[in-house]
Image (cartoon, rainbow, N blue to C red; front, side, top):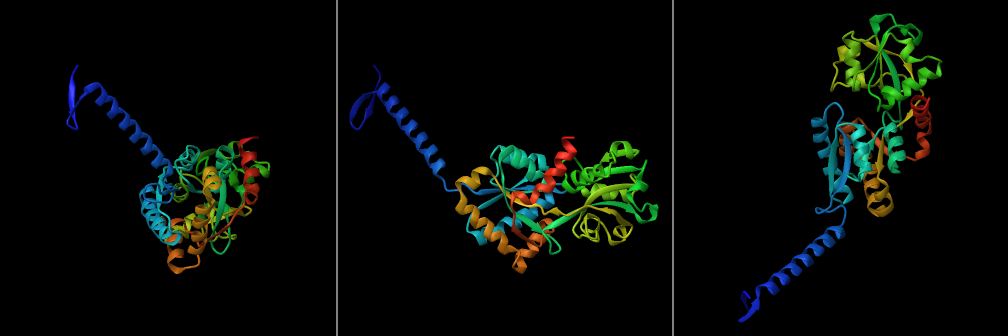
Length: 314
């Protein structure tokens, strides 16, 4: 039998191998245990916040990094931004527990509640109100003044996952007894809000749905100087403004809400405080054009759920 010199004595190699194997198993178990015990919100296990990259994932990543750095400083926890390519991908990350929090649109919240029992925490305040609106835009020189003028015209929604660019405007149109696929000569899904605006400006469609941050439809996607010049903005006007929509949300996963309530509260309180400081307000505005955040409840979003059901379950 082969032997191995161990502490001035001869030990069978088989016994040495068995001992090393036991040590390896113990180390593996210890490693898993330490990983499981790693405190969330630390360098070993940062809290992950999901962002929808939308039309500009690279730009959102830069803004998300600034946001998480500021929030870290004020909540005392380590955070990690996770950039998704769309709201549907963001929902998947929530379902698969790959994020702890997420910025979600109202429709995204409804889907996350239904598929993963997510919990809404906060809603966005813009132009002093925790609401926004869906509008239908046309060119000012088009001669189109009301919805009835759009009969047999080309129309653009954003995409199926958009609250103000699809669910609310389609629900509103259906509520008037109009079936978009029959009323318009062509229905196009442009992609993002910027795409809808560009298609109207370029004459590729006659009208389209997007969002507004003011109840009179004076401020919205088409007035964002990040994407459109003032000259372009002045060429457009809304001919329809929806009922108010509760603001975009900051939402927690069910596991986070159930197992880490204390840390969740730290994040929530730091977020609400952001809108009360000049530096915090600048970061929120730069991120998603948000002034501040206020408490939200699932019941706030019942009108969106009703619109969702009207559009997808009819």
